[in-house]
Length: 124
Length: 353
Image (cartoon, rainbow over all chains, first blue to last red; front, side, top):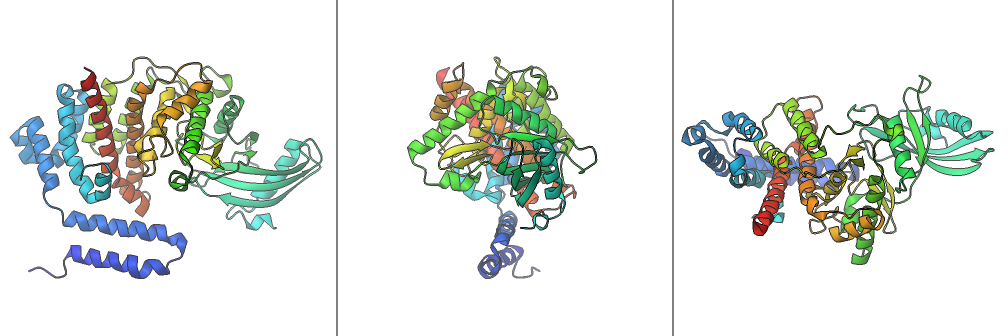
């Protein structure tokens, strides 16, 4: 059974309250903190409502570089491995391809952290 | 005005500075009229002092800035005494800096070192500058001035006896940075595949020809003052060191320091042609702009490492902070910049292959 409103809806209404009802009454020196709090709520809201884009991008990256077994294991287990292999030069002959795959993964994370930035970078 | 009430937390600094100035200037009397904390660093504290010196060669009224460590000082940057020596070297080389005047080396009388410099006019605020109403000509002139300042600074080459505390890069400055950033990432202990990818690229593509000069280390919009459209002072010298001069240019031009004004490559203010023109107006050598894209990647990498370190202060529980937490969430932006910058260099290279 699911309680309503769900987490995303609660975060949204909390953010609206912060920006529309509280912010106008705050002294100017506290606006920055309030805006940061609103941003933190917006990121959380997008994160819990996110599709599986990041998961897919990570799986594609691991599949391409290590094969299907690694993709099944997931990026959390493989991040250290991947980082070490880049440093050791294991993918030197396909750094550009790896860059494309990393780009898809970074875009997925950015669409949660700061979608406006993606837009400014000409990617959305 | 009662100066001691204005210094919030350091009730005796104005009194101490007055006695110090009296000795240093050989005055009969020094009066501090005003002592205000200036905005800025969490690491350093800057106090604006208005003083009247009576007697001696400094007789008259002076607007000064006293710079000292803040209570939460970190040991990663230069000490105030070292920074004073760098500022003197930059001033002697003709860089527009607040003139460094007197250094207090503490022997326990006050509790910490400080130095005094002339107060520069203008504002260092970045956003009003990049969004401001400077005309294209004024922007070009300001950017050219940034180039001139850097060229003057980069005319200082090792060895310089007064700067012997600055370590020389171990071999290539670029490769030395790659090693340094890897050490920082390892110390944090969270794997960073995208950053490792970019660091490997920086390692494989490190420039073969390189030179070593005095560099500012944090030369960017926000760290220089502008008054009436002209640069009035280059500030914040605590990251100065010996490095490849292009590192300063790459940092200034990296996307992360354009404050949203991405079309203006040089610090959100103007274009690199004006920067090169200003640089070459005083430098004995032409500025090789073909190296700029590489050093922009290096600058972006530096910002990634700084952001990681800041976020870690929150993540580790050392300093819970909303601002530091959100800095952690800026990493994807910086990673995107790195990938796009590297891809555009590679595309350009493929086109000419």
